[in-house]
Figure 1 (spheres, helix red, strand yellow):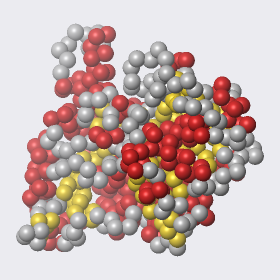
Figure 2: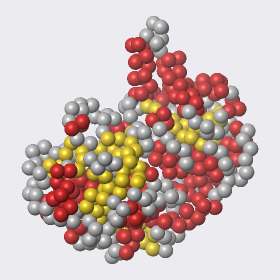
Figure 3: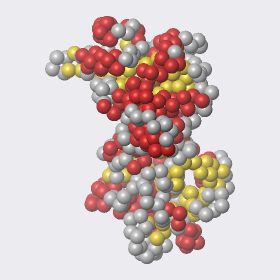
Figure 4: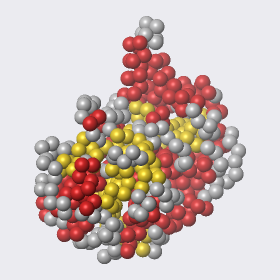
Amino acid sequence: MKYIFVTGGVVSSLGKGLAAAALGTLLECRGFKVLMQKFDPYLNVDPGTMSPFQHGEVYVLDDGAETDLDLGHYERFTSGKLSQLNNLTSGQVYENVIRKERKGDYLGATVQVIPHVTDEIKGRIYDVAAQTDADIIITEIGGTTGDIEGLPFLEALRQFKDEVGHENVAYMHATLVPYIKAAEELKTKPTQQSVAKLREIGIAPDVIICRSEHPVDNDLKRKISMFCNVKPEAVVPFVDMKGTIYEAPLKLHDQQLDSIICDRLGLESKEPELIEWRNMVDRIVNPTHTVKIGVVGKYIDLMDAYKSIYESLTHAGAANDAKVEVVRIDSGDIEQNGPSQYLDDVSAILIPGGFGDRGIEGKITAAKYARENDIPYFGICLGMQIATIEFARNVCGLEDAHSTEFNPFTPHPVICLLEEQKEVENMGATMRLGTWEAKLDSNSKCAELYGSTKVNERHRHRYEFNQNYKDNFESKGFKLVGTSPDESLAEIIEIPDHPFFIAVQFHPEFQSKPTNPHPLFKGFVAAALENRR
C-alpha cells in the first residue's frame, strides 16, 4: 500500500484539502483505488458541537460520524466510502490515550507524546489500511506547519515513513506564494520558511503545491526548487480557478502532478481517463441557461457554512445545462424588512438546516412566500420543520404552532423532541445521525425524481414531525410522502398542488456528486428553470 501525506504552510485555508481531493480524482482516473482521510489537530473530539461560523459545515458520513467539511470534498471528488475512521482529531487522540492509561494498558509507564500519542496517530492510519483494499491512502493534516497542536501529527508521519519504507510514502506540501502589489511581484520567502520549518521536524516534501492568485513562472519554480531541495518539476503551481473548483484535477494534471506522484511511489499506470470529468466541467463553465435561487439561512456570511448545499446546486445546475446563481439571504433581514425585496427576484427558494431560534420567523415568512406565490421550495432538515410550522399556522389554523426547540410551551408542538432524546445531556454525537432508510409513496413527486420507492439518506437532527397532527395536515393538502420503514418518523413532505414544494428531514446534499447530482436537487433546479423570473 502507498501513502500520501498532505501538509500546509504559511496560512490556513490554502485549499490543501481541495488539492488532496483533486489528486485522488487523478489517481482514480488512472485506475487506482484511493481512500482519503483527514487529521485535525484541534482539541475538539469532533466538529459536531462547533459553530458553523468557527468551522463551516459539519459533514455527516454514512455511519453517523460528524466530520470536517474536507471529507465532503473527498467524497465528491472520489468514489471511496468514508467512515469515522477517516477523520481524527487531537481530542480523539488524547481521549483514547487517557482512556488506555486509566485501564492500565500502558502497564504503569509514564505516558508521553512520544511514543504514546504518536503511536495513537499512526494506529489510525494502520486501522484504515487494514479495513480497505485501496491501493493508495491520502491523508491530509489540518492546520499549518509550526502550530503547536500539529507537532505530534507531523512527528507521527516522520516515524511512519521509516516503518513502512521510504518508497511507499510521499509528502505533498501546500504553501502560499503571495503577490505583493506595491512591488508587483510574487514572493517565495514564505514558501522557503514553511518548508524549512517542515524539514526541522524531519520531513522533506517530495512535491510543493504553490497556491497563488497569479501565474508562477519557471524562474520562480527554479528558485523554490533550489531553496527547498525539490526537483523543479515537483514545484506545482496551483493558481486560483475562475470557473469552478472542479477544474482542480485538470489544472493539476496539466502540471503533471499525478505523474510526479506515480514516479515517486513507483506506480505504473496508463494516462488518466478524464473525458467524463472534462465534460462535467464544461457543463458548469459554459451553461446555456442561468437561474437565481435564494438560499435563506442564518449563517449566510460564511460560505463554508452551507458548502455542500452550494456544491449540490452546482451539480444540479450542470445536469440542467444551467448556471445557478445563489442569492444568499439572511433570514434576519426578512424578519426586519419583509420578504418581497429579497425574494421577488429569485426563481426558487431553499431553506437549509440549522440550529437555534435566531432568524426562525424570517424563514417561516420565506416558506409562506414560496407556498403562496407558487415559487419552487426545497426545505432541508430545519427547512422541513419550518415548512411544517408555517403550514400549521397559516393553513391549518393552529395559532402559535411551533417547534418545542424554539418554544417549549407552544400549544401546538407540530415539531417535537423524540422520547429517547429527552434525557440526553451531552450535545456531541447524540442526535439522529447517519444513513437511515425511507420508503416513499409511489405516487409522489419524490418517488418520480428518485426513480424508486426506497432510499437511504443521511440525517443530523434531534426534532421530528409530530405524527399526532398528520391527519389534520393531510386533510389540508400537506402530504407525508416519505417515512421510516415502520412509518413512525416523517422523512419527506410535499404539497402536490404546488409546482414544486418538497421538504425533507435528511440532508441530501451529503450524497450529491458532480458527475452524479442528487435527484432532488436536480428536480429542484429544473423547477426553478421553469419558473424563471
